[in-house]
Length: 249
Ligand SMILES: Cc1ncc(C[n+]2csc(CCOP(=O)(O)OP(=O)(O)O)c2C)c(N)n1
Image (cartoon, rainbow, N blue to C red; front, side, top):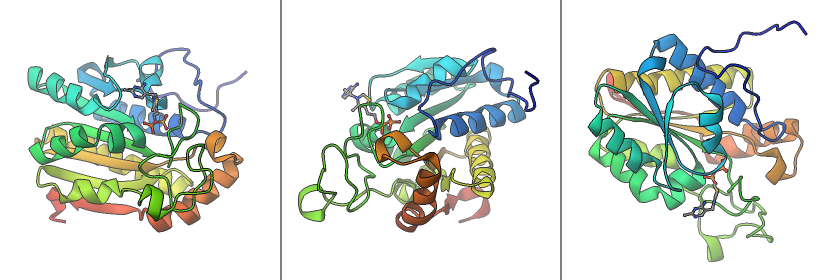
């Protein structure tokens, strides 16, 4: 069959995504791979991922990777960056990894202003383990551990990570983007690039929260899942750049 689209060089040759149909991890990883190619940093980059569907990055990207325990991607990345300051170091996590089990690590990396770049995929659930309530599960959302829907009394409120990261003095760039449409995907790529650039420019910690679909655990078609991102999720998690030290905002 004739290939009609190009594959970023940072992908492994002959790789095949093993994500569920309609999962946005594939789009996010492609954007990261395209940016790595465009910045010419493939030979000089190290990823740190923990557990969750993000872990598969080392199956697909042709880059150096370290594997951390659940929630500890940013702690491992800190060690890698401090040992090898000339390397470009990034983490790629789910919201459960970054904003729940790894919340202390994430917050402290931002407060210390570590020169690393982090991406958090917000799919409002613990995807890999079957759709339990996570730190970003929306109010009223039914999950396997909130079968009646998330409520304030029992579960509290979802966390807005891009805003929290922006409040940390060591953060140089914090943005929230989404993968539900082509214009949003283009904005997502620009934010991913900027988050790498602040590391290359030595400005501090770079963070991008990426609103992404999990049709399997949301019990939706891919189209319905993107509609949910566009309507419900962006209402709760507004898109935008919350901090960019270079542009003084
Ligand atoms: C210390 C530890 N606790 C729990 C788990 C089980 N576990 C594996 S993946 C996962 C959920 C990951 O969810 P998230 O980070 O949101 O990523 P997603 O799979 O949704 O992309 C959990 C709880 C584990 N592997 N290790």
